[in-house]
Image 1 (cartoon, rainbow, N blue to C red):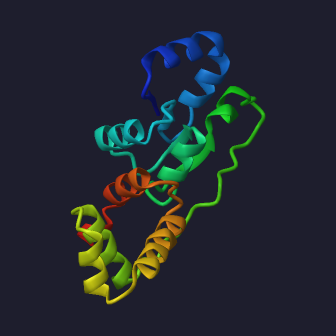
Image 2 (spheres, one colour; image 1 turned 90 degrees about the vertical axis):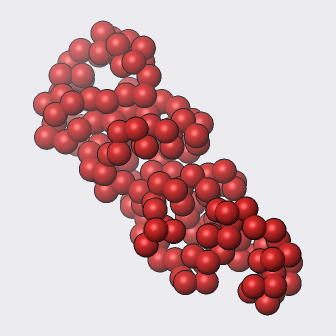
Length: 162
């Protein structure tokens, strides 16, 4: 189909250096998305702009964590693109399947609207340590290293709209 990249200079350089691989990628039945950004916000804007759901994704380690569970396509590390040989078959990383409980959705909603910690503690009737543990459990479940990644992943997955 087509190759879509967040950095046009990268795409031009890659196509000129690896013309054979570029032709092979263009002949694939799925769209190929190359995300060179390692910034969570850069990845979020790329996904928001193109709204890909299926395809083949080449991205950084952070991008793979953020896209896991958001897109239905196969996700590969960006280095795999550079080492790609014509005879090599694609092997995707294991996709995550997230089950978020009703309580976790409520906590994510309060997090998204920037509620105070004391309000969250009163609503859930828990101590600060328990609230922090619940928050870390959700971050671990969604494979997010920090609150920015958590916020952007929740937005990309549309968890709060379900």
